[in-house]
Every structure is written in structure tokens, then in C-alpha cells.
Image (cartoon, rainbow, N blue to C red):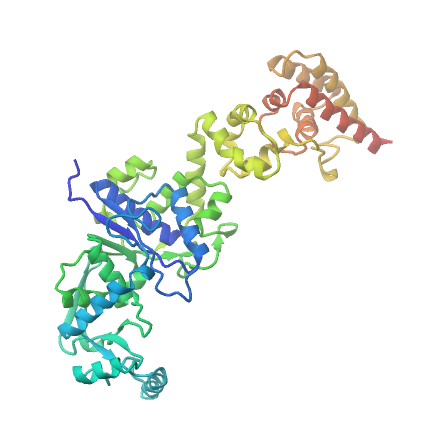
Length: 496
């Protein structure tokens, strides 16, 4: 049984661009909290900014969450008791709550034109004052305001922020944050088109959906007191507020961009989960990596499968300290998870990458291949470069790799011809064949490394590959003989 009351957490993205790892981490923490406490995890789409809303971005974020195994209990695609879960479909709800705030005296109708507001800001800049609304409509009589509304005059609804006193907002990991009310603005809650801004919409939705914990980006800290004031105006109990740590570039300098790839170790790395999938990262490795960027269980445990994360995750161990995006750590985790996969599972995981590369690889072939590549790849995509030769018709090595280390073209051709005869006479690609090839190297006055390196070029077309004899066994004797003969003929032509 859960030791704490069931939590209702929500991930509420605004799909205006590609879905990045910052959003994925927020969703992960929300998901872990809900699963640990036996509660519910809700996906809500905040699309009130229709000019910037991108349907493809919404599809990408859902695909990313599903790939990461972060499933939701309620959402726009599956419904739920608090539907609709798309803010653009909740316009009447926000209008009702905005009217309630006006009636309570905590908000007011503002009729100032954009031209007047622009002029006001220019004058404030000249006086070196912080830009904020000057309160022109704040004292407008209710009857006068209603008369202008009935006449069809464009207007917005603003929060009537207290001018006196202080507001204290409490963040779980940062503690109390106190601001002077005189420094706050009369923020717009409802736009002239009747759509709510985040400040009202998110608070109303969290209340209506009974959200108990709000985990979100630290970018909302400047307006955090405003959101507390809205809760206070409605006399609602507040949720647990958690503003998560910032992601820094791998260098540790500068905040991670939400729109572009960032420089990782040795080159450019992506911040988008679906790119990581294409690059051959395992979702369990990405989840493990993300979980540790802002949270830790202790000072030494790093590997967590999903059940362990759900069991051990704790809001109390979140840190507000910025976290540098460490791609070397992701590679390390991915390698560990790959090496833990059974043969059948690794074969299943790499199959799409071979197919995408246009290589026809049967499931049984990949299963036999799995033990040979498991220790040598950091990502699933690297299996193509390492082992694509198994399924290619042409594996001719590049000219600059020939004729082989410390060999002339004629020596290499003769060595391959002799090796071809041994392979043809061998019943299997096993230890006996390896012994025969080593004896041949001694007879020819070559090092075993030189002969096996030459055979590797012939069979695989590359200087680095999985274990040679095991690879030859999977490829099969007829194809091996064909490839060895082809390179021998090519070297003979070089020597002529």
C-alpha cells in the first residue's frame, strides 16, 4: 500500500516546438510520483496560444512519452472524468472563473488599447521605470465597465494585484519566496478574444482536475507569486509546488536551448527524445539518465530500472541546483542496458536499424549476431557500422586499407589464396580452423595478426569487426569463400 496519499500530477506542455529532454524529465517525475503513490498522471495540452500551436509538436510529444514508457491515465486522446484536456476546448470554463474573480473584486475589466499600452511602456522606459500596467481601468465603476462591454468595446480581464503588503509563495525544494506586492503587475488573465492566459487557465485547470502536485520548469518562478495570489483570490487550498532545476549545456555554461541541438562531447548531440531513438538509444537508458538530472537516491546508486525508480523516487531528494547535460553518462548507461539485453531482445531492438539501412536481416541471423556485437556497441545504431557487412553483397575494402599491414599486394593475394583453401577444406569455422590459419601464418612468415587482419578485410570489408571466426560462421562458408576469392583476385590485379 502506498505510504502517502495518492497524488494527482499533471504534465501540461504547450506544443509550440519540438519536444525536448527538459519536458521529458518533468513528465517523468510527474509519472513516477503518481505511480509510486497509486495516484493518477494526467496529460493536458495547453494550446491557448493558437498562433504558436503546432499539431506536429503535439504528436511528437505524445510519441516521445510513449517511447519512454510514460503513459497517462487521463488525457486528450483517452479522455477522463475531467475532460476536456485541451485548453482551447475549455474557453467557457475560464470565462466563468474570470467573471467570478471580477465579481469578488479580485479582477477588473481593462479597455486600454494596444496603442495606449505601447505609449505607456515608452514613457516608463524614458523614466527608467519597470514596465507594468499603470492601473487606468483599475478604478473603473462596475456599471461603466458593463456598459462598455455591452457596447462591444474590446477588453481584457486583469488581476487586481494588492498594492500593499507581501506575498509569500512556498516551493517544496526552494522554500519560501517572498515578494513585495507593489513590485507585481496587474497581469492579464483573459485576453480580448476570450481565451485565458496561462496564469488563469493553468490554475483553474489544476483546481478542476484536483491536481495535488504541480511540477514545472523554474522559468515560472518569476510569476509564481502571481499564481499564489490567484489561488488566494479564489480561497482554494494550494497544491504542492515544485520548480525543477535548470538544464545547462554539457560545458556547464549557459542554459540549454529548447529549440536547438547543443554541443555534446566530441560533436553535436540532440536534446530531442525522438532523435535519441533514431540514434539508437534505449528508452530505459534515457529514462535512467533523465531521472538523475535533478534527483538522486544516494551518493553512489546510479542504475535504476523502472520498478526501482517508482519505488525509490522522492520529491524530497530533488535538487534546485542546475544540471549539466552529460552525454557521456548517457552513452555509459546505454551501453550497460544493451549488454544486459538477452540475445532475442537485442536482436529485436536492432532489427529496425538494419531495415532502415536497407539490409535484409532475418531474426535468427540477428539473434546469432547479438553475442558478437553486445560488448562493442554503445547505441543500437552503431550495430550497422559494426556489423552491416553480414548482410551486404559488396564488402570490398577501401583501397587505402590494402594490401594489409606489412604486406605487398602479391604477398597478400598469395596468403588469401592459401587461406581460402584451408577454409574450403574445413568442416566448420571453429578452433581447428583458427589453429590451421595460425600455422599458415607461421609458414608464410607472417604474424597471425597480419593474416587475420587481411582475412577480416576480405570477409567484412573493414579493419574492425566482431570476432572473425564467429562472424565467418554466421556468414557461412560459401559466402566467406566468395569474399576471400574476390579480394585475392583484386590484389593480384594490383600486383600485376
